[in-house]
Amino acid sequence: MSEEIAMSTQKIAVISGSRAEAGLLLGVMQVIKNHPELKLQVFVTGMHLSDTYGSTWQEFPQNHITITDKIPLDLGNSDALSNSIAIGQGIGLFSQSFNIHKPDLILVLGDRFEILAAVQAAMMLNIPIAHMHGGELSLGSLDDRIRHAISKIAQLHFPANQQYAKRLIQMGELPERVFNVGATAIDNIKKIKLFDKPTLEKSLGLNLKHPLLLTWHPETVEQHSTLHSLKEILYALEKFSEHQIIITKANADTGGYEINQYLDQYVLKRPNYHLFTSLGNQRYLSLLQFTQVVLGNSSSALLEVAAMRVPSINIGQRQDGRYKPDSVIDCAAKHKEIISALHTANSDKHKKKCQEMDLPYGDGHCAEKIVNIIAQTNLKALSYKPFYNIDFTIK
Image (cartoon, rainbow, N blue to C red; front, side, top):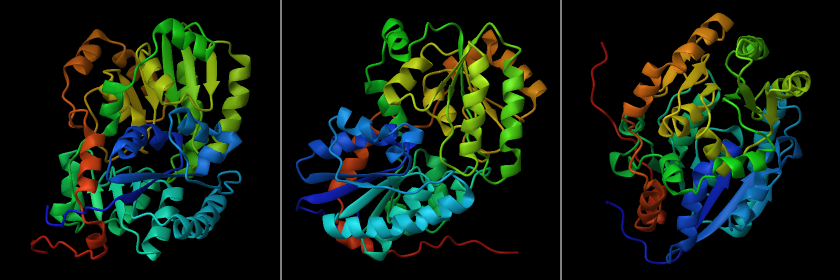
């Protein structure tokens, strides 16, 4: 490593704003917490602090993680204006909090607008930034641009596979600061104790019967299609009445509020439909053991679901550009295509493909690798960020 080894105790601030990233960050937090040369700080914000989205901040103390500060944002009805205002609000509140707690590095994951606020605050305070899951694409979502913006601000990078690492270098990031560590989703599957079926059923309040799992987030690039696409999915699922349909609510992206309002009403009249604001990491992974097919447009289908060898149907454009394991079936948000994809996903041929496929997401020790690299890095030296030029010819 080109940077000098830092010997003094460093304060590492982990930022989390949603259920999606919290489960992926938890293992890293625990390794930082137990490292003799590092001190863990945890800042929670966004959907974690909203009753509407399940007040998921409570999962941190339940996992013996102390919250350093809560940064509340007014998410409104999760429309474009509310989320835009929340970014500005977040920059101010994160700046004040960072100025008090003085982290030596902030560690963030992914691509959400509240994380962009934290990163901009850290940048202006000259606090180095480490970024997990950079270099990925999700062309059907504004998150795609946010992710790349965070990568350009960050100085240290922990992509999930070699393809994403190469893209970061293509973007001008120094190769010696880009580490292909894999994905913490693989760590979780190897290390988290999953519920057996009776325990899970008791926790969910359900008797599981051939469950299908649906998560539908807004396609924020094509906002007009969000609710129409959901209706197409639900119409397709009506043809599978022998299955239990378990749905997790949408996130706080623009259009998420409308999706969740519609789902609240839709499930009332259908006894085999069950809607959850948030399952939590342990219940979610446990449920995958007994789920026949996962469908929707969550990035989880490409990571955790694939790693659990469960078939999935990726609907629409939100995840366009991301690496798609062989377990994933792409289809448009049209009920006939979704019905066909469900039959394919349930076939013995596709289930065999899920069991035999390779996954390029590391060996299940991602969290340890990330923390060891941080501990061995001179964080003060990261403030100088050169641009890495790749020689090529423009015709």
